[in-house]
Image (tube, rainbow, N blue to C red; front, side, top):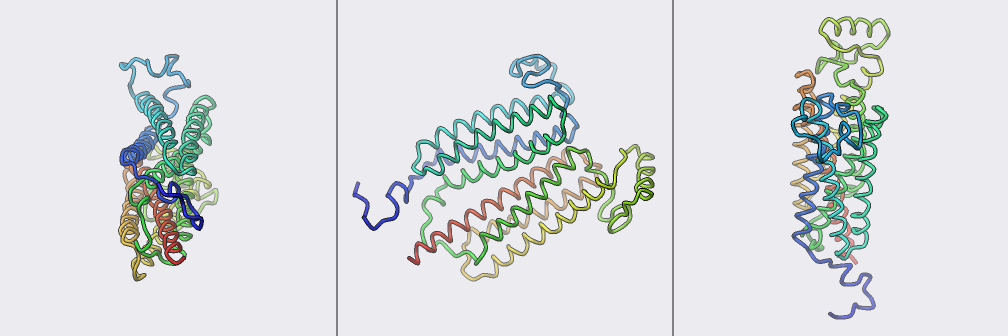
Length: 344
């Protein structure tokens, strides 16, 4: 190995890490496992099974790994399955952290170490949500799961051949694209936060029609109007609602429109800019497709009276939209960095 040039800002190991195909594929598998875990968590909430197992970390007094399979019935099946899969995914994240310790980039080693720590925090939040029966902890539990999915997916990107072997000239990125996609990601996360609050506060169907809301563009929420809505809801065996929950769902609908418009805007800017990198154009088109699918799923959640499979798919696609935005932000930053190196 030649000694590094005295004028070089990076050592050969830092500037050119080695691509490890097995590590990358394992990281991709871990990311897919986190998405599967999010789907299971969505099924737990959609089936109102969050308190089907009233103790933690045990399951009805059993070590959860020895809980009799014949007792996996009703909501217990969804809640107990979620716990077991969470234990498996956490173990996989710990293995990933150890594996990352053998690659060259120090910042990625630390990222790998932080992820299992947050998985432990996620498990504690889930357990406290059961023991304390606090819906607010369920909201934090769901939002942290989204961030973990982003983190593991970014690790998969950082260990990919494209990221490691990208060279100047791979394509341009429109000005301010990185900052704009990051801002859109923040908007998406806020939208997911509102959605998680609605789900855990059991306010997902506070408005039971779409695209109107109780026959209006923006429903009235004075006490008399809310009382009228509740009389109609009770006649259809629906839970009563409040002005707060109605406004929360309207904000969620407005947020869906804002997210859709924002993603369309940045994607159009991407396609209209000459010389934009192909990878950015392709994934921005997928981003647009996903947000339209998500919009339809949101409507179907209302039209199907919050059917469990539809509502859970809505949660999963929302997670994918957030992850794709984070990955586009990282890819854009990478291309900008490579462009600056080429200029220097």
